[in-house]
Length: 190
Image (tube, rainbow, N blue to C red; front, side, top):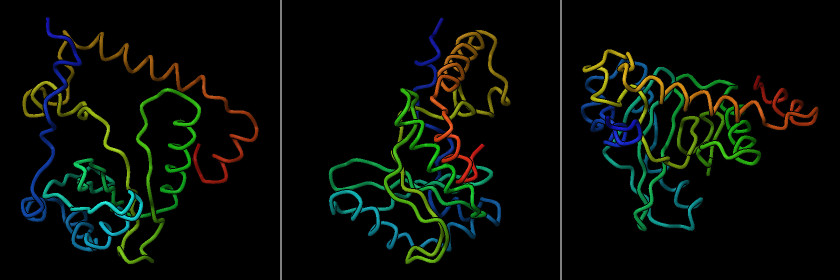
């Protein structure tokens, strides 16, 4: 039996070209992508990454709440540019929570390199520039949604559930003292 990590290693099928994305994405996601000043975002990313030259790659995807586009630097490193489709106060809470989890645990959480909470910046949108972690989203594993319709095949369920449970247990061990709770509560995180 193939193990779950091997089965999940191929590249995600969710990525598409910018042109195809703008043609096929829902109107909210396409508008969000069009509003983004990608050249300005690359300038921000370059400044945050030792002034390395940055290029917005022709790879984009979206979920319910975000548009994601890959950025590549002259040293071949890559970051993800995450653009909220409907910006709100949650972005600040998400950044604070990601920093907290990275600082206090060994859970795989991407580093946040730069962010803006609203559209009042040269990029024209709220954004988060973050580390690209290896792997793919569960929906793209094992042939993607078209193959399994979002249902984990029986032979992979135990490994998947154990993996999720292990992450849940480790998250419950985070040191949430009164100071940590106050910090997370003040940014809107629960």
